[in-house]
Image 1 (cartoon, one colour):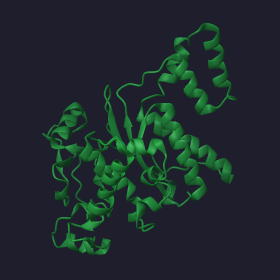
Image 2 (cartoon, helix red, strand yellow; image 1 turned 60 degrees about the vertical axis):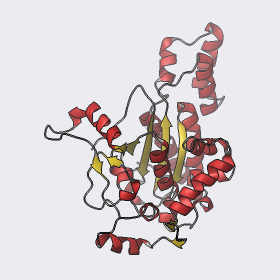
Image 3 (cartoon, rainbow, N blue to C red; image 1 turned 135 degrees about the vertical axis):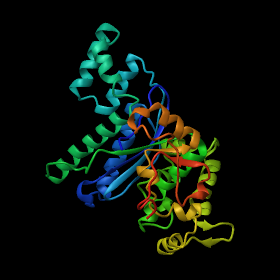
Image 4 (tube, one colour; image 1 turned 180 degrees about the horizontal axis):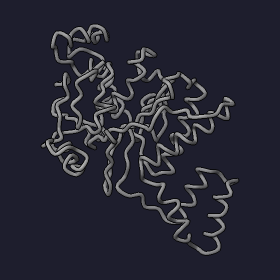
Length: 321
């Protein structure tokens, strides 16, 4: 099913892209370069990175797109300067025209503005720039990415965004790389804990707290208490194999257990949120669905712990693996 975007208002998207053939081509150097490009691209496009996780064969980004990116001509030129650098002929031309005329002609202004505030442009340019760097670095040619990126539209309310953010930051735990996500260098939570202001701001935007100590405490509770301990017992969550056996017995997963498995609703559900939100988006995009379908919201099977969350897709096979 084609991804859904909303226009004219802010939105949050969980974006996923995979390396061609599932190959593990991204080592430490490559992930570090992709991390730097990620922040550069977001700053240029005017998007907010809530959190992210870069792994050897795919990456996740949870990003907030504003309803509108407002920037003067001088700010547009400044963004391109920071993005491309002072040696870029494109930047030099923009600077020259702005200096001579005091403003940018409409064609040049539109050329920059059409690249701002759009998740598709953001992902396309990020992947293209990294592919060019990677191929040059490794003396290779051809495609690096397996497919168009996937995206799930996420209702921008704290509980929903926080759940998806925790799912993203727990990727290295699910992969068996670390036991604590703060130990994994290439995820938003670890970068925030290391002191990067932008990474802290992204997580703070879903907590309602202002001081990082409070933000970190609340988010870590989601990651390591609600998501890492079974209820109030203090016992560690079940292993992946044990969780699957419990599922086969018909048992509902706890939140912490669910977030330590691969949940396709977070990557293939098309959109995620309350039933009202999903039905609203369904109505706005009614033409994409068959005439027999009456409503959009579908229950997240096996995830009753997530309460009123619903998805646009009713995943039946391999929804939780």
